[in-house]
Amino acid sequence: DIQMTQFPSSLSASVGDRVTISCRASQSISSYLNWYQEKPGKAPELLIFATSNLQGGVPLRFSGSGSGTDFTLTISSLQPEDFATYYCQQSYGIPRTFGQGTKVEVK
Amino acid sequence: EVQLVESGGGLVQPGGSLRLSCAASGFNFNDHYMDWVRQAPGKGLEWVGRVKNKVNNYTPEYAASVKGRFTISRDDSMHSLYLQMNSLESDDTAVYYCVRGAASRAFDIWGQGTMVTVSS
Image (tube, each protein chain N blue to C red):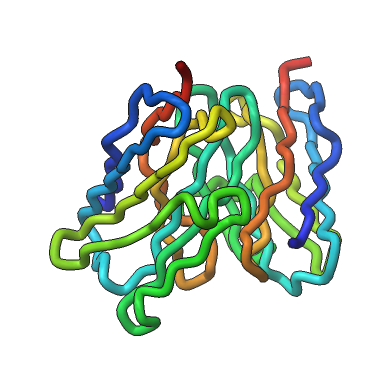
């Protein structure tokens, strides 16, 4: 199985901050890396697919980059609605696997 | 509106069985692979398995943790996805999400989830 490791597991930030979340795969997954946002009591939502493609309706302050084994989710200017938990997920192989999540909290 | 609505969750004793359903609407269900993802209380997301579309012979695939106990099926005529869960264990306690596999291979549509609690 492909192991996905996210770091940090949590971070504290303020509105307006630039936030970066990292995700590392245990083997190369090409560009098959997706990012999801989860808010308490709600289903996760797709933010970015195939490393850097924004899902429809996702604000442009979100961006993704990387390839192979190392990937990054960046929020250029954190907004109040962005406080949430973020998961990376590989869609290169079966089983599909997720990172353990990064919780973005208010500083 | 593109929508997935799960049902069938509840409380079940260890060793028991439960069948979850997912009703799809607003898109061509037949074209898509469909997956189940679960989340134990306070934990992260875990892929349970998927069923491919008709073109790919409705082939199911499973996570090792559920293989042999869970069965994923679909009825394209009813736009429905199913998860038959047998020999349930306490570790199966989770919110179960029905999710749509997009052409990009990402999970682009999620249901609201249904809670399954395995406890005596």
